[in-house]
Image (cartoon, rainbow, N blue to C red):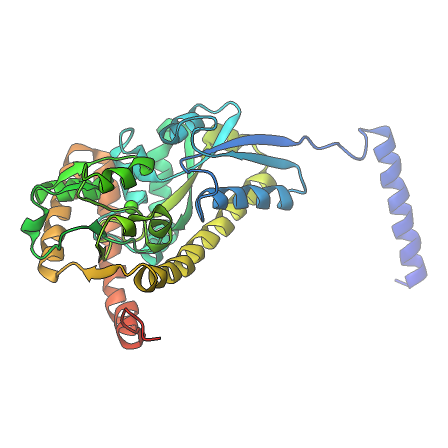
Length: 368
Ligand code: CA
């Protein structure tokens, strides 16, 4: 076809389309703006947690060119921290949340596997299980009865083992120790004879200072430094065997999600992925920097749990997981999938991450 002929035909087509538009519905539909509220489990401005939820919401607004707006509220602003899941489940105007799956253990025991499992997968392993090990499907299946749809929200990385004022040299040193440690890790330490306390974040420092509790875990160096635990505890133990790759969750009201146009669902999913990546990288960068500050500026004594202590905790952890699985069919299904995947991926780590880090890492305290 000659260029001039082509242009003529193309032009005629455009006129025909415009005419059809004029006869039928208006050519340009004003697309409805969708507004959601999002509630979180986090205090305002908390790094890589509350601000990650805000980051996610901003991405949604940007990618949708303002058609989809999510307003983020910190814990207590609309609903209390631990009612995030319930609020999202009910829906209405609150159709999104940011939390951690182990907070939903009271609703469904299986939820805990999607957050952190003692001696479970690290952040790389968790991400792989979600995407390629059936984890995401099981997570959606676990939350479906509550009309909630989950998405991974990034990982804290391996957490720290906690703050202590006495050394942990044998497993018996946990006997009678009053420690703040939530979730499955708490159940494991209870087996070791500890008195497990569930102190809310805001009260931990004062309780540790006054001796109401003897020890606490929180997250990792970044958040622990902000909490100021180095002022009231001598020893900072690692590794965080109880939360080796804790994942945050974004949760959506399932019905509201399904009612979104397909492209807005895709935008929401993409924004979750971006925020998840931002969170995981942020924790990794922030934790390493903060640990240096804790060691050099605040003279914290960094301690490693002895191997026999970790071995014993591993035995108790397996018992705890099996006990929960024996009582709850969904927890059993999830644990079976998780353990099967961990066996393969964990063994791969034996010849990949583990020897690699052993060969390149400096030892703390780093020589300046
Ligand atoms: Ca923790």
